[in-house]
Image (cartoon, rainbow, N blue to C red; front, top):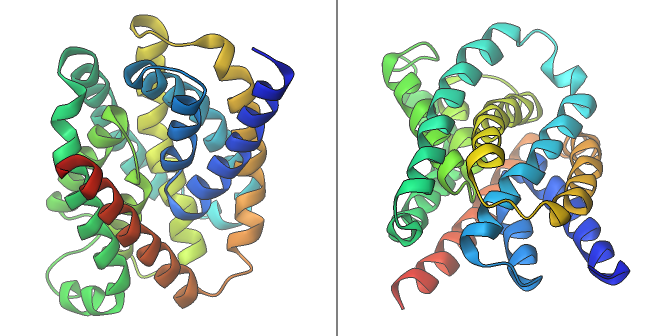
Length: 250
């Protein structure tokens, strides 16, 4: 690896950390960077998961004000997500990677639209669905499984679900989302580190960038009001769903 390659990975990691912590789309930045560096898809995927654990560490360090008072939520949802992450990682290592490609665009599209209509969803679920409902727990496990399997825009899925059932500000929900998705990615990354084909020489520069990006993103998020942040993430998600759909079904 040349110094230029390392610099590109660091810069890509910074952008991925900001995109992941701020909008839940880290893998859609870092995964293509690894592909462009010459890694095959499966190796790029597992290497990406290992590097992104540092993005969560940066988010944890930078989001302490938003995480304050959310200990119960974090423990409940992070454990569920982590369980899903283990299952998702096992699926990735034992099934064809292309299998999920056809479903991913639809998941992201649904989540993005859910973010765009969040106020209506909150009214709809006010008397029917709450943060402790069993269906919410099932949803968190499934999102954790998707995060462990591939993870592109898993944060958008998690933010849409949490935003529909928890009446809190977007910066606080975003911080909670980072811990929830980060827990599933951490467990998956441990599995990949032990059993997967991780390209370790690519991990260090990408992970360093991810940590810096994750540390910076909460500072950016808390300076954007709720509605523009929600709409911006939703529109980005719709665009990504269209792109991934075209790639998968062409």
